Image 1 (cartoon, rainbow, N blue to C red):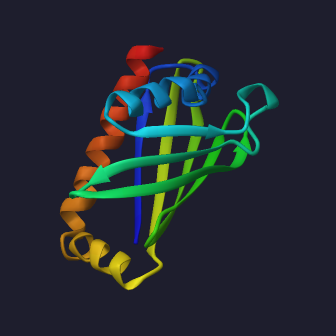
Image 2 (tube, one colour):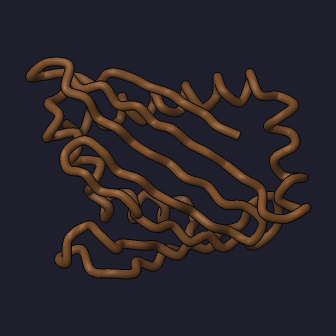
Length: 151
């Protein structure tokens, strides 16, 4: 299952990329929401090879997800891969400079079930695909506004 969303941000491309690679900020946000986050790899060694292991509760069950930064092409592309017990996902964030003070962010998310229980978790998304796509686009817009405010 694939989702794609895009939004324009009133900030220069370099600044948006800098905000997207501020992983400490995103780690703190996750911790505030009750997620146990452990970074694998040091931030000083560059971005390549960074990964995170996280544990959280979703729908009453403990979940464990590993997130790897798999593609880095500064300042225009970040690619992530996530693996959990029953699913795997890929996400690409692409940045395009529209002008010196405007950037378009495009997010592509692919989710794939690896087990029967993973397929059961994805089934409601498939049945309500339009609603899920609208929610995804709304979240991308909210994320873009948050980046704009931080810029």
